Length: 87
Image 1 (tube, rainbow, N blue to C red):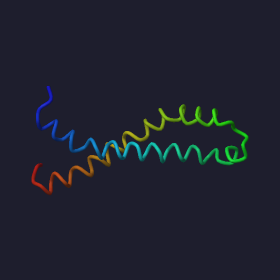
Image 2 (image 1 turned 30 degrees about the vertical axis):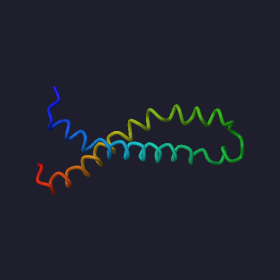
Image 3 (image 1 turned 90 degrees about the horizontal axis):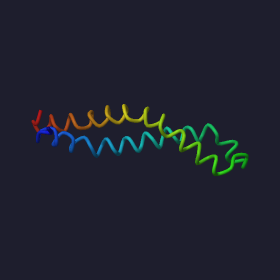
């Protein structure tokens, strides 16, 4: 059963968690694309293969992005809760 305190904390952490998750995921996938940038720009790799690369690289990238997101969102929420004497 979720208490009102749990709902409040989840609401406080949810938005930074989503923003950081999307940002970290984009950075990790951009790093993957940069590694293959030479063949991509020389048209050696077809666009369907690039989309498959992004698709298959996403689950491992999510595994890297989620711990980063939890840490940063908790780090952003804690000072705000402390500043308003809610902890």
